[in-house]
Length: 169
Image 1 (tube, rainbow, N blue to C red):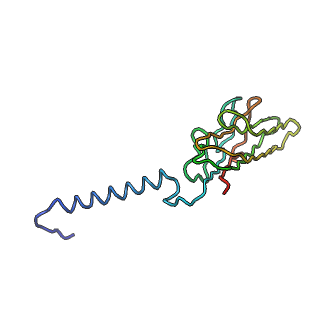
Image 2: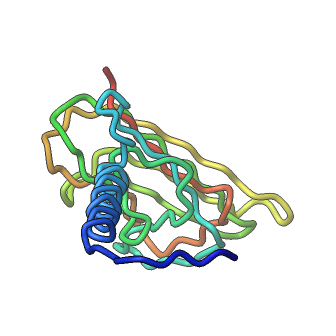
Image 3: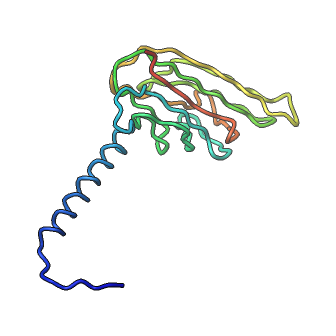
């Protein structure tokens, strides 16, 4: 290791500090924007449940494993998608019910159900039962879209139950 001696001026550390802060600001902008600086990336998300859950009627289903989430419009904490702009959107939700279990997923927009699904698996003893549904909706900026059971408590098999949405161009 070589040591350099001399007079240290504060201009060089200040310059490095300014550059580091500028880089941090750019990274924060990219992360918060969710589009890596490219406004041309379409709005869309896909998430699935990381574990099997029993969820009470009227409780929002949280799909906590996010595969893609442009524009950070979907929350893996609340299970809700908030539309970043007015547009036509397509949503899909799939549910796997265990043998002897049921679920009745409903796609809700601002608290009102817009699409229904019934997954009653009372006949099979060793087989899961999968239900799917999709909907195309004209939504306003700030509308909140989510899935919850509209009939009773639901038992939902993780990994095989998912929720997706995308803005149609």
